[in-house]
Amino acid sequence: MNTLQGRKIVVGVTGGVAAYKAAELVRLLGKAGADVHVVLTEAGARFVTAVTFQALSGNPVWSDLWDARMPNNMAHIDLGRDVDAILVAPATADFIARLAQGRADDLLTTLCLARDVPLIVAPAMNRQMWEAPATQRNVALVRGDGVTLFGPAAGEQACGEVGMGRMLEAEELLEHLEAYFVAKRLAGRKVVLTAGPTFEAIDPVRGITNISSGKMGYALARACAQAGAEVVLVSGPVALPVPAGVRRIGVAGARDMRDAVHAALPGADVFIGVAAVADYRPLEVAEHKMKKKDGILTLELTQNPDILAEVAALPDAPFCVGFAAESRDLDAYAEGKRQKKRLPMLVGNLVQDGMGSDDNVVVLYDDAGRHPLPRAPKTELARGIVEHLAGLLEASGR
Image (cartoon, rainbow, N blue to C red; front, side, top):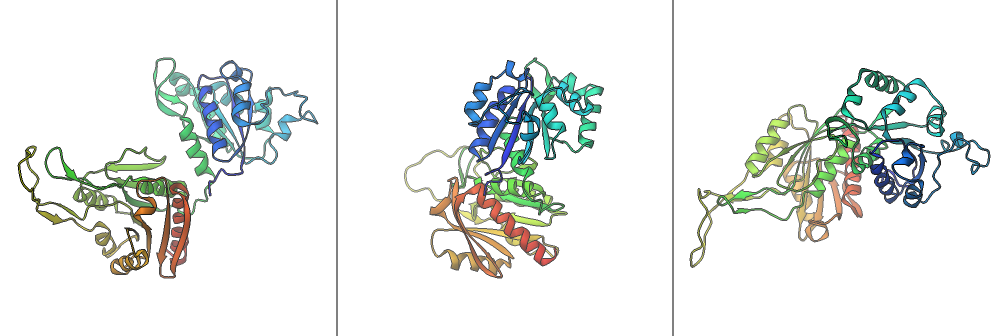
């Protein structure tokens, strides 16, 4: 289930140019199933109007501490009741300073002072303002008061400067907020996983690969990171953004992937082999582009290393999770693979159910039997897989 589904979120918008990103954030939160209520400061309304936020959230927008629409005229109290979090995005240097001082001179600062729910801020300011000693003191103060910061990021700024202070993108803020509500069942653990296809070169411009999109592996990397794990993602060639909090190592062929996995393994508690690794590669790679000739072209192939089997056979092997994508007889082939490689857990699916798509149907196999998960987006399936994995780790005492 989406961690934001049914949650009530108050979004505070202050007076920074990054307020335009807040409009997209409100839209994404609503799309994720959250009930969004916007508190817009007077300065914030100079960048994006209340009409925009009302249309995107489907709820009235609040700006005035004395707003008579609230029956008891206590918007600063009632807006903070029964909410799951207050997220201020953008949070300007001035807002963070007032927050650090405990000021309550408008609706948003008063709401933040009167709250008993989590407060999250997404800083947005010029790099000199972010680096200023006063701002850093204020950031330390609000962190000490239990406020969570999302960002900032480094990059180009509206003023033309380049550096820290840029507000995270709306999609990144959404991902961070989703993670905020995930139980940290993998906290303190290191997870190494593989994702995507491999590419086995034939010559400088051609190669053998497969249609794996990498979506399931990247979704699992995100789910593990959101559950508190340190995550190293060894990825074949895909065009997917790296999940927040994940360290990505890009590779091409199976042998490169094996080397990267073994280099990342020290200290790992879990290894998840999601990648669709090519079983074979050309015995020889042509130095130059092969020219077309009449007749049949014959390629001599040699077997690639079985990365999952190698890791599972290590004397100090981490908890290993395999994946099996089959076209038929899923139970027989998947459980057979699990038994052969002595894996405590394996995830199986039929290729026609999910290869390359955004959703899938999977079955989890372990010593207790088979555990089917219904069709769902791969992001949700990943959370289900991580929950099952965490349960097995806890039960095994690892």
